Image 1 (tube, one colour):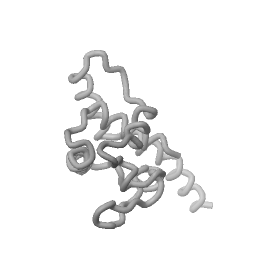
Image 2 (image 1 turned 60 degrees about the vertical axis):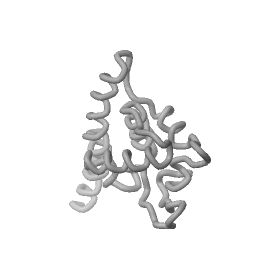
Image 3 (image 1 turned 60 degrees about the horizontal axis):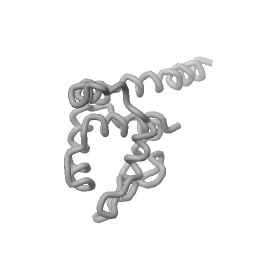
Image 4 (image 1 turned 90 degrees about the horizontal axis):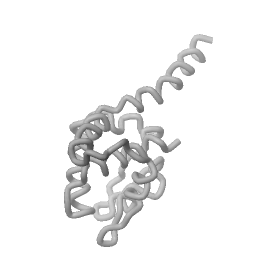
Length: 130
């Protein structure tokens, strides 16, 4: 009985852990500075961003069509853990790591830095994946 109670409490708290996202909170403040008309992030825009190709590649090129599945780096073949926090609870819990990977991947895929709005939309999409 105690084990089931613990499992239930952990299951119920996971959405709260994911919703309290330090990286997304910092991007929200930056997005407001970038664009005074900014209202909030959009999971739909984030999904479109995830699938959009730039010079023939997209986020999905390495991370896979389903962000709940393991990906594979297109060049090195290295395994990539799932992007969606529902499948990898470590995702988006360390704001410095999140920014490091956005910096690297946006540069590689888009050949430019991502905006705060793009980053927040991307995270909103991955948080919405169930």
